[in-house]
Image 1 (cartoon, one colour):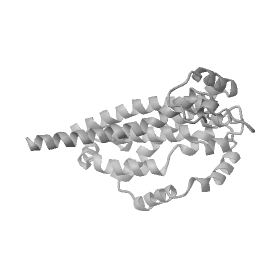
Image 2: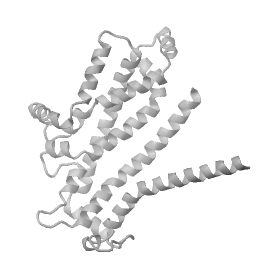
Image 3: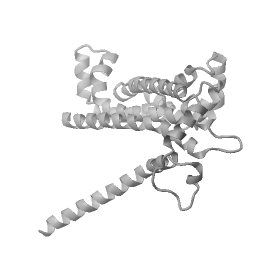
Length: 278
């Protein structure tokens, strides 16, 4: 009886901790919604309002009047989707080769890849911009997509995942059947790597969607910018309608919530399926 009571107490405490974590995680989104649905004066009022107001549609219409919201969202969707697809393709290919193929210089090349991961992004901005200017890509979608087509973090993450998830016996059996590298990657590697790819896809999509510095530098046409840069344009020189800016930020976050909910479902489902296979 005591053991059952102790187990129930631990379960109750665990649920309470999880509920607290959920509230802490959700509250910033709720607070953003509250500020976006009120006026700027209400935002700075004391005590602050903790319930939504009635100015949400008014603030959203101000956002539509102030920037080309749908055009900027279209650019952001194309850039984030394209980069995510290319990262999943190239990083999984490289990781599969590093994890399951023994070729001359493999370790040295892998350490070179990790070394690029340690270089701060700010140090690469100038040479990267100069290269794109030489190619004539500045101001185009290619400048947003091509530089992010592969990254060291994704290669490292997928390589570590592939080493433990893909059995060497499967690779050897596919070689006996006459499968080449790409067929092994497609038929043996990808089905097992889906949970890792799901996480990498969500991470990459969020990173490109929320990126502000690189699009600000490389997209030289103020009328053709990503969503984060466009929302920043809502800030005035002398005065800023804070409720309108927060409404724009809220509108830019909503698609990410949908992507996370869809992606996390696939991630959990693929992870459970992989566990059942093992």
